[in-house]
Amino acid sequence: MTENAVVNFSELVNKNKQTLARLKESPRLLLHRRDGEDLVLTTAARAEQDQTVVSAATRMLAAMARREPGSMELLLDILPDAFPWVRFLPESDVHAFAVELVETMRAADSVGNSASVAQLLVAWQHTAEVHSDPELLAALTRDHAEDYGPVPEPRDVA
Image (cartoon, rainbow, N blue to C red; front, side, top):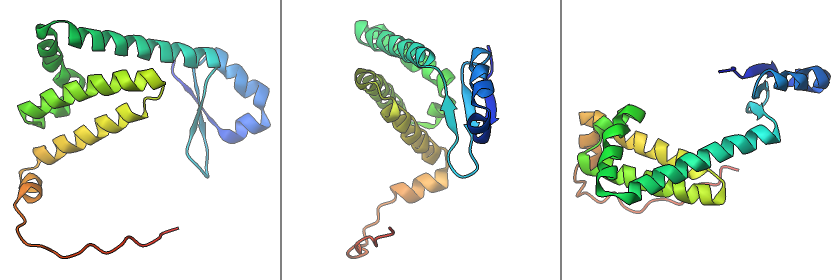
């Protein structure tokens, strides 16, 4: 597998032909910026290929999960290989995660935007992190019978 090339953004600006020529050797260029978030540059054809592959995998996973009762058990069985942190989730949460993941991937694919899938994975991983720490889990699940009063309005930080 060819690795992505890493270049400074200034190289693209100052030596654009030579920098863009590197896309023939590397599928993507990681453009490092000093004053902002790094960028990824690729060709439109490569981006379309990547989206086609993700879409196909999503549709196959969703179809598999809906087909037969045993397919969900298979998915539940392989989740710890793909996401080792699911081992910290209660069994019912692992099932809920699997269902939500497949449904969110399918919905995200239908609009061509995977941000919701990334957000879902991060949220479930944080849930697993809470379950992995007995003290944190106890603190967050403890009954707080005491009322701490009204919550103040958030201040405008702009």
